[in-house]
Length: 115
Length: 115
Image (tube, rainbow over all chains, first blue to last red; front, side, top):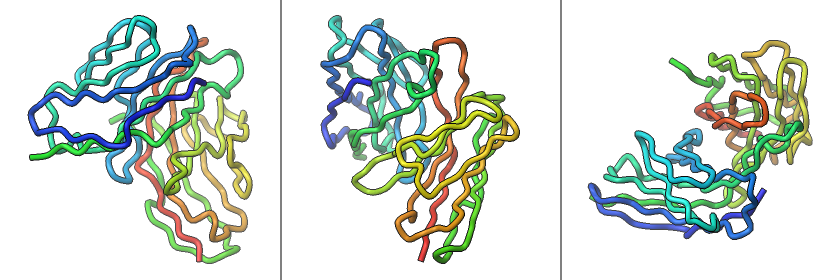
């Protein structure tokens, strides 16, 4: 699975959009971009995933560049409860074996939403 | 409510005293997995299971055992716990359908201290 690079921390004002970047320059054609977040010591929570098109759900939007080498997670109206570590993970489709279903968590971005 | 449950949530034990951490999911997921989380090391996969009676080692399986006798349950067994197994443990589950790896749902975590 491709390696990802994220800034270690970011601040965002409550009510504003939080834009969390992720670089995955070695991503290959069959690899998806997933975003999870972990609120202090709780279990990681799935947010969104995409392959090459932009995606939106009730939690966030995911913007993937045309060359797929980077992406941005957007929380449109950040609240204090969005303070968490956000993980960008790139992984391939499962291909017969089970290994590609493993999530490889990097160090993520600590998003601090300020009142 | 769809969820992954773990018990106990907190456990303090002594070296060598066998223990089991239970994990149960009510979403009929085929795939289940155990991770441990340590400061500076992120989440690392211990064991995973593709379906009933099918288990395999993750990245850090030493000192752990698992079993998958029923689809909903995936207990983690520490036969002879040691202090280096002091950690925060997460169970996760997901669907597996064809070649697509669905998002994983995580339990609330079990904080284990071995003295």
